[in-house]
Amino acid sequence: MVNQTEIVKEKIKEDFSIFHKITSANEQHNFHIHDEFEIMLILSDGMMCAVGEQTYMLPKNSLLLFNNMDLHMINTVKPGPSERYVVSFRPEYLELLSSDKTNLLECFFFRPTSDPNLLPLSDGQASLLTDILVRITDYRSPENAQLYGSDLFVKILLIELLLRVNAMYRDYHNITAPTISQNYSLVYNVMNFIHKYYWDDITLDTLSQQFYINKFYLCSLFKSVTGTSPNQYLINCRLMKAKELLLNHMTVEQVCSQVGYNNLSHFSRAFKKHTGMSPKQFQMAALHR
Image (tube, rainbow, N blue to C red; front, side):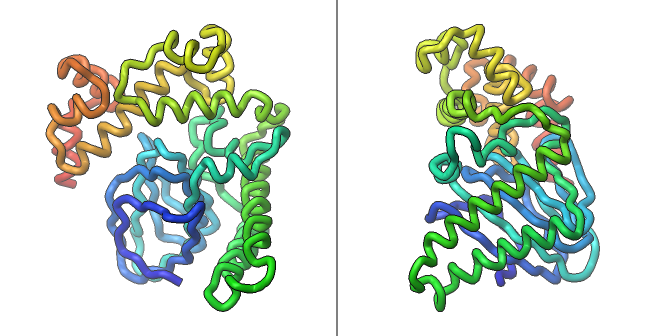
């Protein structure tokens, strides 16, 4: 059980981490992006989540899903204890645990709806996920970590957790299409390439040559998985990173060069189109809330 009041950016040293958090004081976190993916199971009322342009009041039994470009903030808004489980993991690790038929990362990337980060759960669903998380925590405890087979039990339970979450995600969003895993690996690799080199001059021709695929087919495939084009995804990545840097007190000029824009006016126009504010207005409004 871990009590924490503020996490700006978490880095995990292992393939994944799991924390059971109970906090009794009001929490005020900063907007942040994780290099890792994150599942957060909210077990009490009184918390708020802001992600991208959306703000949610979180009832008990809410599940939150964040990939490594979801700029988000979690705050408590009511007095009293707040309880949640937080699981962070490297996407490469779950990619290795996936099969050709079933990709455990689907719920983090396949987003055909406008509210993919929040998944309301029934009492039974929340209880099922909590039981899995408790068992993982028990196997990873110092007294049990050396038991025969504990590492494999943890891996099995983590796979079960992601299978359950993906099934709930599909059911809630009425996703009945066959699994996208046959083409998912390619799309994931393209997304990962964009995440790594978003500051560089990435064009559709660049991606086509990098991954040996027709650029028109790539556009169609990419949009079927992510709901957006590769170019718009690149812009979104740049602007999400720009928001994070602005919130960490970097100047507009510094942020412009850091996120791949060679022209300050071009950067400002793109940012204002995305947020409705100039970079400086966004920074001042956020830092003086």
